[in-house]
Length: 433
Image: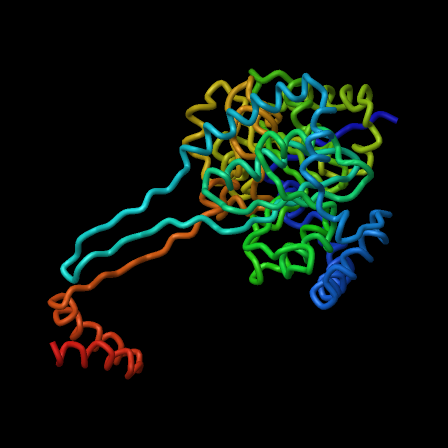
């Protein structure tokens, strides 16, 4: 049976449901999954290595001990040498570009003089970060690059990588961590790995922040430990919106939509928004053709209804209003006026302009980060970057004269809020100067 994606009028009731589907993907499964995750987190927090090893055996089939949990540097080097030479060359080139882009994000300290003295902002890196690298049906060396390089630029002193113990360490993962000089790599995955990073065990030192993607259970575990540690985000299923007009190549748009829909959870969302019904019909046919010829057709059959769809709007303003309301993880603008259209975009995680800028370029190579806000979070959140691994500290150095001058104002403001000792701490100093 031919797979045909729907064409929806954006202003219709059906069209508005598309927005909610982006924000609510996978919520039906979250409640039971969260209960299971909470039990694992509690167990590891209380029982440390014993619980960590138990769940590694239960979920990954791996028998771990304190001597085999952390991979030795010699082993990592040996596995790295097995990496495909073509991959190794491309990985090095990608790392250069990622580093060059993120080095521009470095924040700078500053100082200003005020009537009261001097105010400063200091920048300090986090001390220790845990990077989670998924290990499901494939390897994700790109995750190593995207998470480790910004943290290194920020100046993080200790970077620990965790990846599920699925047999031998994949050569591509080994090559990436070796290339970046990461020495601390653990064979652990799932919520138990997140717990070990968050709470610490005898064998795993706790971290200040956990970054990196994962499945639903990993995402829920990160959500649960937030507050004990910081996290990059609560990552949901992959999303893309493609804004296209009649000048776009339907096959290219179809492939870009399927690229985000092939992640395999079944909760991905890939939408094209266009004002041209003729283009919509050509794209509909192109998507059907690509799915029919795809070696991973079964993945697309598991998607939610309307996960792949084409939305037809009345005009460009309506198209971009919809995009801004969605706040998609990825946005491609494939229109004749893409530079002008960009000016109206307020909410998107990563934007790809013009016909030659597929999301895959950013996912792997050109230098932008692929760790992005999902589920509408791009309305208020940013991609992972160097600033994700730093802290700002404010410093106030107030002079004797400045203290005397400011004290009456502090007194008024503090007493207005009924904080007597706030007021007194300033008043008594002023009296004794």
